Each structure stands twice: as structure tokens, then as C-alpha cells.
Length: 140
Image (cartoon, rainbow, N blue to C red; front, side, top):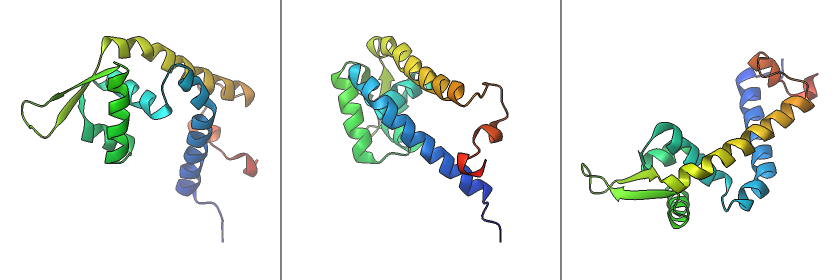
């Protein structure tokens, strides 16, 4: 019986990469008064435009309590605004502010630098086939 389970291996690789990314970038985000989830929210709003709090939570796979805390923090920093939806009084519309847009280049730099360091370390080019770049090192 083969121990290889491609979808499972791929999911495990994503999980390992995500945890390493969070561990390594957390101090860098902290230096700009953010955490990894704050950064994810700002990038999502910058790329996709306004969103509801529930849609952000679903997209980022975080619970209602966490999204509430993250939105409160980003509001306090002045990086997002929230207003009640005209269509649905129970929905908050979240928008990135000018101050939030100013911090996005720093977030992108942190992310890009982290990835470039890993690609360089593993001698992988950005145009390498995806599956090969995700191969776990324990199988090589």
C-alpha cells in the first residue's frame, strides 16, 4: 500500500508553509503594529474592495470572534472604516482607508521578501512547475 496521498500531502505542505510564514513574519508585522491576520484583511480589502465582516471571515476561514477583534484593531489603527449596510442593517461594510492603503506596500514587501528568501534558498525559480516546488523534502 502506497503512503502517498497527493491531496493530503499538498494540504500538509500548505499547512507547514502557512505556519512557517506566520512564525517568520510575525515580528516584522509587529514592527508595523499589525499581525498576520490584520495583514491578510488589508490585502484582501485592497485587492477586492469593500466587503462585509462575514464575507471576510468566510474567505479567511476565521471565526466570528476573531474577525470582530481584528476589525476593531484595524479600525483603531485607522486602516479600515466600517459602516452599516444600506441594504441590510445587520451587515457592516468594511472598507480600507487611505492610511490602510499606505501600509499595504509594507505588507507586500514582507510577503515577497519571505517568499524570495525561500525560493533562493531552495534554488527554485518563480516560474518552476507548482507541484515540484511543493514536494516535501522528506521524499527527495
